Length: 193
Image (cartoon, rainbow, N blue to C red; front, top):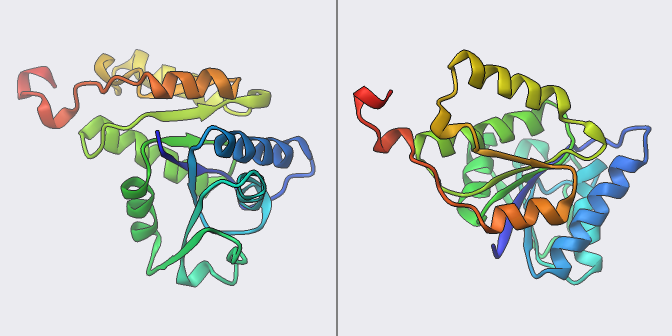
């Protein structure tokens, strides 16, 4: 992986571990020669991931909709800052520019980005790894709900492994590097569905 799209919150929770985590992830990615594609803001976890990567000499590409430039305080320190028309263009750019997706803690926007990456992988719009860093157990309930969707039958067994979740970044990156694409819906016949 030369670049990963990193999904994370633009907020900074009172628990400072989250911002420190984002900064450490950015630094680690840069040290491994992996560029960061992210939401282009300089606040919260977004700003921390960029700061960590930039401080370690890494590539950071920010992608931010014009309407959010002021709200998320666009980060002029990025290696490259792309201002796009809307969220659809932002997420398409994340997919086009990256070799995988890495989700850190965040809110509604982060969940939207994660689920779109999962949905697009399931359908076959991309065959890239979708990683979820579950530090501090932040995503425990989401992972339980994902298992529930699998058990009930709303997620096919062929797609049960799309989300790769780990508590440790090294383990997660190793799994993402070893990613083998699954059989997408676009390649299935009606009898498979």
